[in-house]
Length: 386
Figure 1 (cartoon, one colour):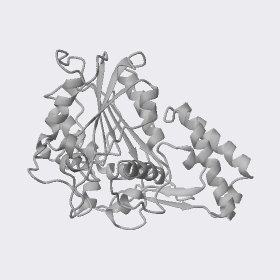
Figure 2 (figure 1 turned 30 degrees about the vertical axis):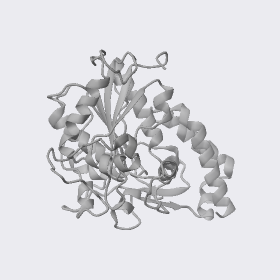
Figure 3 (figure 1 turned 120 degrees about the horizontal axis):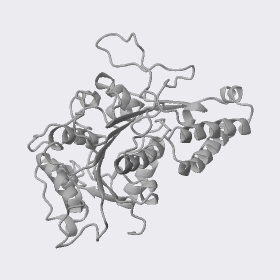
């Protein structure tokens, strides 16, 4: 709606880790605050899929997409650049306009997980040459870019050797682009990025959220509904994985990113997750935890400040999918009743924690009602023995 458009287009690099396009920027706040959203198929797997299912676009809808070809991920960076040009402020309006005449002022690049890694390479190698983006937002980013040239290779984390090695940071983000870069990470990526951790600057913000993980139960539930709707086959959802979704933090980040690009007001600086200082050399970084096993420091969502469970990035097994899912260990009834003087006391503490998060700028008022409903349902389930 042109009357509601805020002038900022989010251009998201579709994630293809599942063997088909995933849209990581589907937050309701994007539309509530007047953003336009462009989702770009940039990689080979988005078109052809991954074996054995091959659920890429060409098989999902042959009538529409059978003529589409991306022969190598080597072209992905230029595909992304050309997409930005086609929808940006200086686009050619003499032909078909993908933006249907909207007055575009700013173009922001966004990518999550594997796509965030590709965006980090774009930032470091392409952005200085092709100045088409006014800002970059990397979510659940492992601190590791991707190669510029891979030939015919496509990444399949389910079969790739040393998949977990890809979840360890290896490079910094350049700091000379003079445009905002916003990294928003869960506890898992904060661990991965510890060795390449960068300080906040005038053009860089890094948020780390305690008690969260790359994937959440709620996120998987939503994804499954979309997969079923689109008649795609997905891996069965794991049980016992982390139950604090990152989506509310992403929503706050979109809000701040728009203001940062438009008005030059940077997002708030938030505390970092605290790591054990005497970790043995050569071992991965170890998070310092409180008496409930919850990470100290970082962004404190209400599920962390008024907990009913130990949520963390500690995996339930050593498989790559378990690592991405972390864990959720609900408190038993005795512990819950020892922490809170009844349901109302818990709800008051949860609401106060949520309002502090809103005051700290890491949560939007919009999300409070749903968080409170979920918190009450969780309390009731524990006391019902389910």
